[in-house]
Image (cartoon, rainbow, N blue to C red):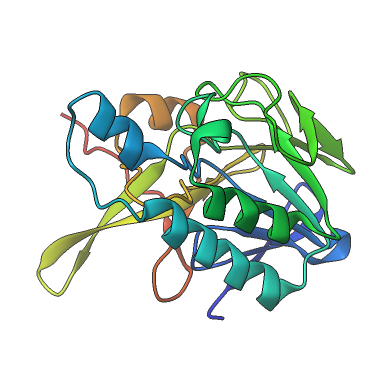
Length: 224
């Protein structure tokens, strides 16, 4: 699967090239910021016309990761839906697909800023979750330790063959781990931004997604 294994807060974790995080010891797959239904919402408000199959592409990737890892537990780390009512408004086929993925698994929906509160779907709905040495929440908190979060959709720009390429990425240092957005057409915040530079320690690492997960030092803005 071209994965990247690393240690964080005494937990042996695996970054998947899709942007999912796997914790083998716990049989746990973690994904963040699926933003299911984004294309439909954008069309309704007169925004950019995105291809209408983003939810199916995201769910197909999630199903493949679940089959590959055989995870028995899932945490969706917030902003699983692009707005609260989309948990009800997604096409029936997509809702049935989610139900099939949930079958036989311990499934937790963590509250995000786009989808606060319970939705009319199976699984458990939580503000945050603590498992062992790790705490899972949507948005990073100051001075947190062992924290796994999402929200920022981090992307790294790195030089390759004479040009810059951009890839969604994980970010991690001693205290915190931020997941990339898992959903299709979700955009991203560059690692050189002031927000991410302030959150992450100077020695932070990026794990690029794509064909394979690849660790590089977190790219930062050059001093003025």
